[in-house]
Image (cartoon, rainbow, N blue to C red):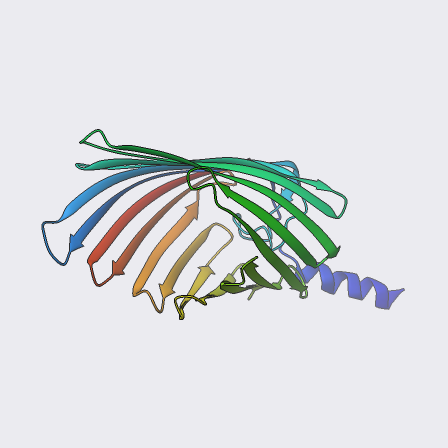
Amino acid sequence: MKKILLALICLSAALPVYAEQYRTIANTSLGKEEIKPSFGSNAKADFFNFNAIYYFDDKLALGPLDEFGYLNRISNVYGSANHLQNDSFTLIDYHVGGDWHLGDFIVGAEIRGIDISNRNDFQDDNKILKGKLGYFIDENLLFNLTYNYDDETKDSMVDIGVNYQVILPGYDYVGFGYKTNDELDVHSVDVQYFSNINESQYIRLYAEYNYWVDAENDSWSVGANYNISQNTSFYATLDVSGDSYSVGAKHYFNRSWALAGEYRELDADIADVSQYTLTVSMQF
């Protein structure tokens, strides 16, 4: 009996002490973008973003208030709206969808709309429809299919994906993902690692690799997120092949409200792009 009690004490000590649960997570972002082309004058744009997700059961935060694990087993509905405008054009990008979990099966649907207009009265309206089907082969292995239909071009494509997670002591984990399509002309691999490095500090490390067969090229990106406490984190990302990076910080003032700031820089052959973003997050 003493050995069992000792094991339970050790296990509880390895888990975060303050575990919060949420059903609704929403983010509102405001930002500015400056484009410096290789030829011509500079351009500026303002953008606004709102996104939200609602889970039909409690979602457990694994220590940091914005960390919820690699694989999701809870039904949900979600949506987002993006608005970008400068002196020449306006872009509106939105989508709504949901995933319903029926035992080990997932059934989902999504619609995305993209509206573009400019000062010369040009307007383009396109919609992309998605149908999703997933199956948990076991608790840690998910196989999924996504059917994509482009309403403008009338083209369709099926994405094929596999996700696997390894659960480590406490709430630590390693997640792996692979995705391709029915033509096998693009391949994407991602890996994510999360760990509680001491009593109140956490780290996330992630990397993604994409390869396009027809273009015979690839891209790499890596990132890290360091939580100095349950409420405060700093992060950075680097696109190795695309010459872009971002740095940012996020702080929760309480369990429900947070403020984040981010700077992103892209150095491309045709233009350099700088982007500043301020985000307010709400969770309850």
